[in-house]
Image 1 (cartoon, rainbow, N blue to C red):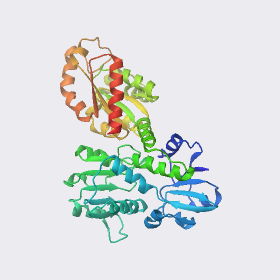
Image 2 (cartoon, rainbow, N blue to C red):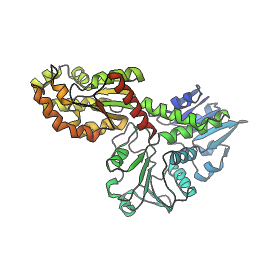
Image 3 (cartoon, one colour):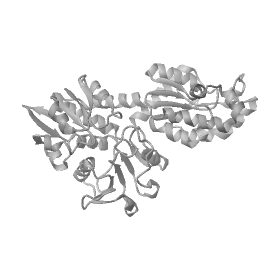
Image 4 (tube, one colour):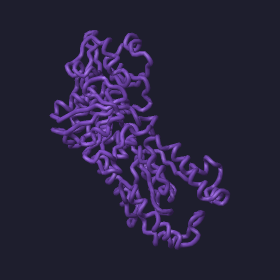
Length: 416
């Protein structure tokens, strides 16, 4: 018996990761009582997540040195009927720092949260030679802690690491703990949350051109180390990196934006079939949800009401994973739509020459009454498409060329 134990696990990617490492006996185990779980289950190896990383320690027979120092356990193995606790989060974060080339030596580190994970982060930062470490939390537990309300006292800190679950699925839209725009010297933000792929905190960092890293690589690397302990079998780093890229690509939504008739529906369907993603079209979702065609909605209610319907269907799907989403041409004009879709999606702008589109026969498009209308839309919306795009595909060649270009650019995005 192998698996992950925690209180709520609907956000977890761990089964997929361990399956890809070759462990097909790995499962999720939710429990409200960690003592009962430990006493009543016979397992060879188990991972532990929130809120039990410290709570589980009294039920173990031995701790490795890291677990003992941090008082945080996320991996347990059974040897000769003895339960031994390990901290593989340390390894996972250390590998993340190296993979993303984050310079922490002699830097001031601000850690959000002071729970079990924060102790692991603090230990690693000290080992890597950081200058100063402060933890911000709602309650002070040690001399290195301060209250979150006092974050403005640390605006000169260069690295910020979030160890709290604030912003984690299903509470994607929790309020931010700090005002990131006030940190003029921050060089990198690390948010240990991996679901959603881009938390509100990460999206805020990206807006400010701050390097931002989520917790997915750490998750895969700590799982690598746990798997090695479970089965006493080493996993090469290049294999673990392939697993990381595969998990990232699988869970990532491909969100297509662009002018009407730029090919969003076509490319969403093609990419969906190739990558085995569920295809969704926001216009189709609106028609199904409100039992009316798009032209009829415009005639009966006008564009303003239509945009509220559009936002409603975006709210319905943005927390999902592994989608290929075709959007309406004007969806980008509401910033809230894009902020939601970016959480789990890579935004792909299909940039097609509006003059080419204007030569087509256009049916059922309420905002396109004559060819010049598409030129007006392009002038207004073009800068907005560019603003939100993670990658841009200039639609000027054959379909296969553009499909390959999309795949290559997304691979680059994942591997950066």
